Length: 504
Image 1 (spheres, one colour):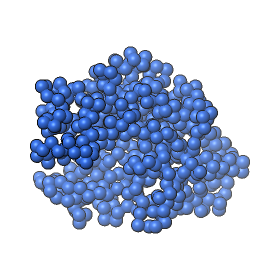
Image 2 (cartoon, one colour):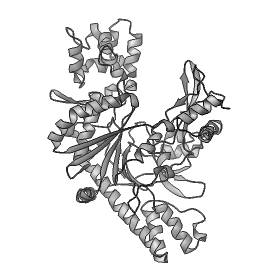
Image 3 (cartoon, one colour):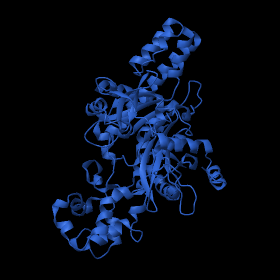
Image 4 (cartoon, helix red, strand yellow):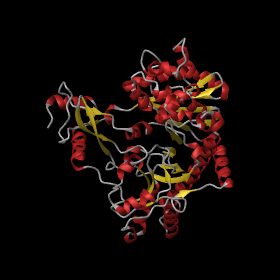
């Protein structure tokens, strides 16, 4: 299948030939759908905080944080181009008729122009386009070109994390700046906040320049020292692309085409973070300071629950290792079933005490995550479900729609009854009882990737994404779901999302 030139290319990327061949087999065979058996709800599967519990866990975190190394981990490689799809379409099709502005039936496009001065980037755009008012019917095309094109602000090619999102009087903030502010408020350990951004190679220098320019202002504002680091998606996590007949897709020069493996590739970046507690949150889910109260409180409370759970698990492991008594085994079983909501597999009861202890230790001694879940109000995204493996064991998982067989009436009914979805709000504990880091690669379910159809050079191809970061890449972690308020979830998927009240 591969020429000597192909093998040299594969080796240069740091990928093994056997892995590439396995990826091609995945294209041929596809990925199995997830065996969801129930949606996680507040009745079972999702923890809710009462007022006293919320404060109690937040206080627990505040007291413990001085002894913890905390890092805020922000996937920030996303380009902003998809935010402006509507404007790119307008730029392509606009014929000079100002009906686009005057006719409210154009909806989102009308709102963009009508409220353009509410965007944080408006002043810079207006200064760039002197002697006329951006958004005026006569200037619609020039307005969009000034915002998106390289001759203007070049927002169409910028990383989302470096766009002006929010106004603060005459000042503005980017998402990257808002994440610094958040870190100071809940990831601040003895006056130091560690923030790690994963960025695209082509944007890394821009991010570094931006952070270096602004962090002194935030150090003064929050009386916090910021330690900011960056990493890129590793080339060895790229996946091979194939033609529709599953043969390797080749570029015009005859070389193999490899594509980024999706956000699941970031498990490699995450495993290199040396921290006791890691907060994971997407780059675009930020709000101005005046709206951060709920976010900060729930982040602290979820981290407090994480710390309590981690210590309970470590104690159970210690007892099981000391002596596999009936008491130690029953305590561990009870915690697995009632706290972590994990059901043991069918063969468990036939084991002797030593075998049961080893089995339970293997189940408990894993990375741990507490995941915020919000009520489903129609936003796209994965959701919390109970999933059963072939062995019979059941655990909590975040499952994407693409992983579910919606042609199966039973599975479709489970999805229909789901009440919450995943806003990517994770707090992670990634260290073993002895203080060493888990090798997070050992807890990935490689059978949970995704296949999609793309195109290049006018030719159709199939692309493969690795198991998603919070889906298959964390499939074998221990998981707790917590209901968090919708006010903590404010992603910016399209430019008009910035007009929502939580971004003003």
